[in-house]
Length: 314
Image: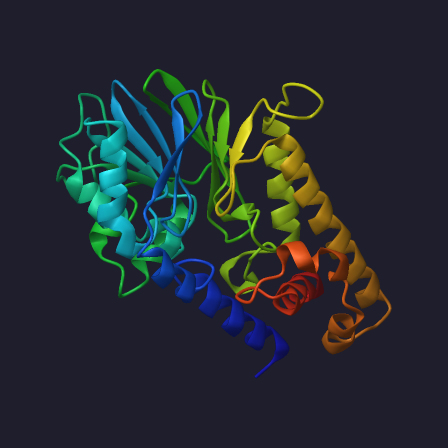
């Protein structure tokens, strides 16, 4: 097997799992979900493996991502703590199961669309599932993904806009980052951004070059998120950011994470220019000063370095 094939195999197995690791998903299935008000009409629903953003108002509920498949009923129960209205939209930030696994349960539990709302493509009633076109292609290519979990509305442009609960909502395509179909979701009135897995506070960036991900795309995505954030005072507060995994953040948190990624990327690029092999780059430990914070057993520093090396070597 070639080095690139080995990287794709390891990364693919991790990124196809329901969460950063399948074990994390199984443990989370026994935990109670937690609702946290972010600001405006937006809440964070934590504990479904992948973070979920929930916007509620007179039109019903809009969710960014759907959590892992085993948490579908729990997610519905948590949303009902916020509103008795129908779930009109589920916006998928990318294809992975810890963010799309609950699509079917959420769609089936939704009432008929309101006047002017989007009808699903097979003509039945239910929540509209919106994502980048590459997400639909990825999910529809998997034999184990039911049709009801596929996006019913897709976009292939730099962004896609909705207006819901009196608020402009924008899906911003972040190409070739975590995958080739990532979207950030911007709630313009509430001043909240849900990033999906291009940003997380719990681990190094996870991406698979074989699925269209790249370290350069991760950096470009983080820069785009920073462009949309406006701090309140002294680089704190203001626009709040919901990562794919981890706590609520502001601009300073995203900048700190972006700087870490940029520093590690530049170190590895320098080592590659010196003619070092992958094993030599790993031995140099270019992530050493960040490992205590971002190193995990499911996405180790060595795995991250290997993915960056493969991305830069392409």
